[in-house]
Image (cartoon, rainbow, N blue to C red; front, top):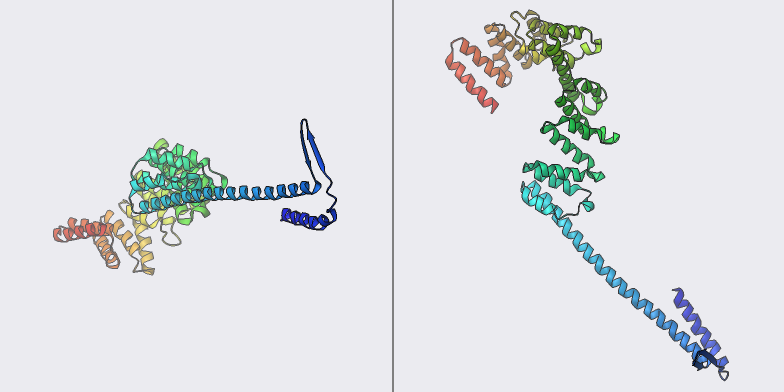
Length: 388
């Protein structure tokens, strides 16, 4: 635009000044060694004007050529991008269709940088489905180099290392994550699994304190129970049952009142054959009513005369006669105590409220002990169907 304005200005000046210079041609002399150029002022002006117009035309032509060439490169680049996008889409579709070989083939055509490593995650998943673990590991390690795929790739690698009994390697991967990623619920869950596989129960207990909100109450209770079981099992195996009881008494009151710790302690006592002590823990731990972590453990008691546990269950049943879980616990407890009449009555009522494979098997064993082979066989068949 500026050049055009200058050109127009020169033309106007020429139109105005031209008539004034008519008859006053003057001349210009240019001497270069033995070469001289002589012309009038008007000729020089016309030559300069022609040079300017030629320059502008040449500039326009060069720009036009560059635009055409650039446009061709963009078109070629766009075509390549569309081709890669198409391969990525086909790869994902093949993965969903369980055509893992085709998925790997299509995803191998994709530029990982353009997709922030997502193609590597998908390729690794396809390799894992084909149980090509080394290839899957390599792809996940490559995907970790892309920030967008780092967390997902690390989680897959951690799962693989735990699966292949390499919890220490898994823990190293988790520790390498940023603090922000370490607060992810999936990271906390896998970290708990890795610590459990490594047998680092005390560390698991310590970390669980900060994961209660992250994991949620149900998973927190589960892993706290696993950690407590691990700690109690270590004590019992290394120092014996008496030391286990002393250790329990030495725990803070908060832990002794925690259902997860109570369940783990009761189970370890039963493992050591101390069923009466376990019964006491279960009864005293449920003064406020049945707890989902503790109630099922009544079924495991093998005490010869579990009167305290039976009284507690019957007390609860008076308030909730149609509670199948309470009836089931009473039935199993009575069966182990050889009170087959009570066991049969409780289990029959529990099964009238809902079908349960364990209750069917227990009732079948009772019928078998009563020499009722016909009923026992029918119940065994029902239990098999319930489990299938």
